[in-house]
Length: 83
Image 1 (cartoon, helix red, strand yellow):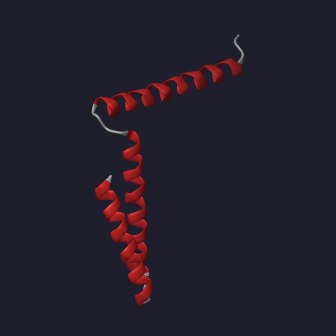
Image 2 (tube, one colour):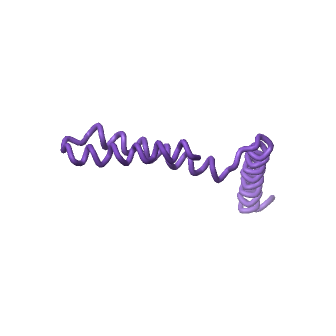
Image 3 (spheres, rainbow, N blue to C red):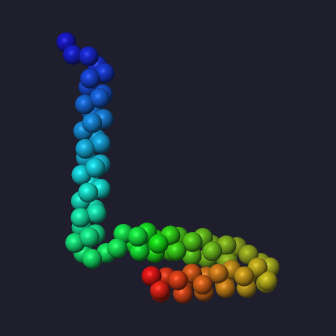
């Protein structure tokens, strides 16, 4: 009878191989399509920051803070256009 720990090690190894294969495939597709992964990451980061600032803008009542947030959103939009 086999050791139960061997089954866990085998399952973890298979899972890691699958994750590595998926990551490799993602990178290969991104490079084949001419997409720069660093630019993609930067764009996603800016998109998430914009979503958070938009949420804050909707919940803010102070006029000066609203102006600050609007300026920050405009800056993010400028940066997104540059990326």
